[in-house]
Length: 330
Image 1 (cartoon, rainbow, N blue to C red):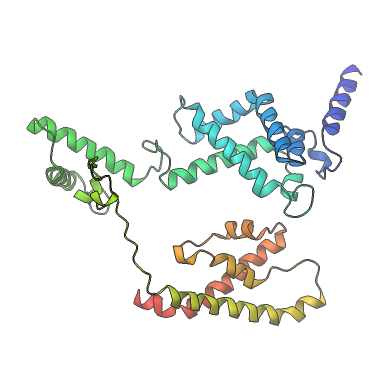
Image 2: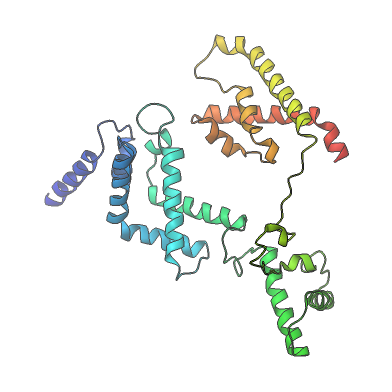
C-alpha cells in the first residue's frame, strides 16, 4: 500500500512539472527528461530557456554521461576525449530544440515532441548522426581504424609506411618525387590492382605545406590556397531555365487548385514553393535533400511530407527536360 502511494505521488509530481500549455501525450509525461524538456520548450524568453537548459544539463549529468559513453563507443571516438562528444550532444540538443521540437507557428510544441517517449535514445541517435556527418565531410579527425574508414585515411597510413621504409633504406627523408615513385612502385608490387584500390598517389595529393614569408603574407604565395574569382558565363542562362521550371510549377499548381478546393482537409504544399526551396542555392551548386526540404518548408504532417516527395519527382522530371542539353554536353 505504501509503495502504491509513493508511486502515485511520484506520478503526480511528474505530471505537475509540465506547464499548463503542455499538449504532450499523457502516456509520455513520466518518461525520462520529458518534464524538463517540456519546460524548456514552453519558456517565454530566451534567457529563461537558457537558464532551464543549464539546469537540465547539471541535474542530469550522470544520465547524460551514460548516453555520451554509449555514443562515444559506437562512434569510435577516443574514450579520453570527453569534451568533443559532449559538444556534439549539446549541438544535437540545440538543433532538436530549434528545428524539430519547437512549434512552427503559434505557442506549444510540435507533434514530433508531443509523442516522444524515449528522449535519451533520440538524443543519442542525433548525437551520433552529427558525428557521422562531420566525419563524412572530413571535419572530424580520428577516422583511421574505424570500420569503413575513408580511402584517404587508409592511403595516408600507407604513405607513412612508405616514407618510413624509404628512410630506413636510404638513411634520409625522401623528396616529394622520390616518395611518390617509391610508394607507387611498392603498391603495384604488393597489390593486385593498385589503381582501383585508390592507393596510388601524386605529388599534389601529398598536400605538403609551404612556409609563407613574413614580408609577403599573401594567399598567392601558395597557388593551392589562391582563389581567383572567375565570372560564371552560364549563370544567367541557368537562372532563366530555373525560372522556367518554377513557372511550370506555378502553372501546375493553378491546374490543381479546383481539384483541391472540392475536398480540402489540410493546407496543401505548393509545387512552386518546393521548387523555390530546392533551387535557392543552385548558383553555389548546393541542392537540399528531401529531409532538408521538409525542414525548410516547415512541413510536419505525414501527408504533407509525402506531397513534398511527389512534387520533387515532378520537379526533377521538368528539370531534366529543360536541362537535357546540359546532360548531353557535360
